[in-house]
Length: 379
Image 1 (tube, rainbow, N blue to C red):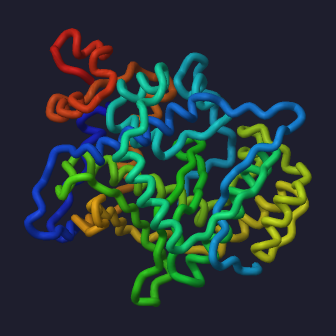
Image 2: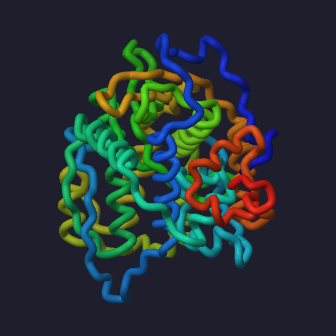
């Protein structure tokens, strides 16, 4: 867990919070804990590397095909990031792979729990987790149609992700909204990926700067605790950082190819080329797709400084709270540096702070936590 100084974001003002009346505050709910568990599950799944055979055995991948396909911020470094120290969590579990935004938020929630997940595996999926995933799928289906695409290599996997970004960006500009948009970038020298829940254009139809929105569902009709909101703020700030850097900086393609061990001249299969032609583009090689991706990025605008978290009741999707807050570059940088110091092995994992020890009641690793042995509490 990051130190108290790093974990404390500037307090939200009354004007930053649009809260529905008479909604009680609850420290934690089963569903909100499920969100954290889902992030931990994703982290554990990513800990098991994907290995392609020399024959490039085909695997089935479900990829987004958007309803409309048109025909046509700083700190992303051009130099390769230094390799993580041998034995670090980054080297052991993310070698030649990117950290996910869910890795960042799960680490911020509890570093020791994150370590347990990586070392011992993910917890079982709960009903609340499944219900939250179903709601996100429902929101996605409102604006996106899905198509199955077969990929035969890592290059084709990335090609599909870049094409999903291109088609989602086109949809945003033409229809004013898109969802489940993949993003990638270098953050403090480490590659990071994420999937933006929602981007929408301002209703005034004047500003070209999209609004970042993330919707979370809750099992009970309560608003989240400050610790949960802080975790949500960090998540959406990660998305803004990645989006703005793609828009405002030159994508470091050579670094990308080198770090992920990808061949830019890789010849795409007929299935992938057909998928790309769906958007009105033609590509023969993986590098062709990356070039289209870079061009698309430079036609877009940075996102707005005001970010939005939405909390819905799981039972009927009714709105519990809309929480608006400002992007804070200094606070975000401090948070990321704290998280990366854990992943890079610069220090031992930290336990949660005393005031957030209530998280331990929901930790599946409570009985194995060293803190529990000395304080009768869990991490």
